[in-house]
Length: 256
Image (cartoon, rainbow, N blue to C red):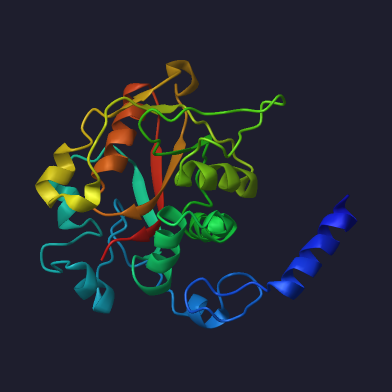
């Protein structure tokens, strides 16, 4: 069976070779080396809490006040009541990273799931390799239901774009995907709101389905883009209220 699948892939790639999703060049696996090398990583000179960069061009791009920011904790984290333990991102939301996320999320290029899950795996190794994580979680959609096959394995049908990646990352990190969060309130798209409305929009929108499963556990909550952190903080609140110990956040990109 494996030999047949390999032969089928070889024949398919011969007729329709993979192309770079960003620039359109023929390449080995959907993102060419040139576009991949242009991805701007967030680095390590960041706020110890939310992962916001501090100095140089990164700080200027992120709008950080270096005078206010001190002690490796940024001014945002000093003023906001965040319930997560740490937040980190793989790259900035620009160029290649932004293009991949938009095509995956909005145009449903789900063949990019392995690439994006690989980005998260790299960021996990850079920032969280020493941490103890019990479960992976992500942000569910309103009304969507999880589906399982006869062997108890999660099916991609009915899952949103980040649940698909969470299931893939679960395999890459050998860490179970919990799928224990439910969205109980319909919210507006965060991208359409200003900062104050973004903070209010997801309030009280999430709940934990099985509270016993969260007791004393550490969670890695993933998402595509960090903007204000409001939605991810609401997920963190739901997990903490259900007895979770630490909530770590990890996003593919961080908004500029």
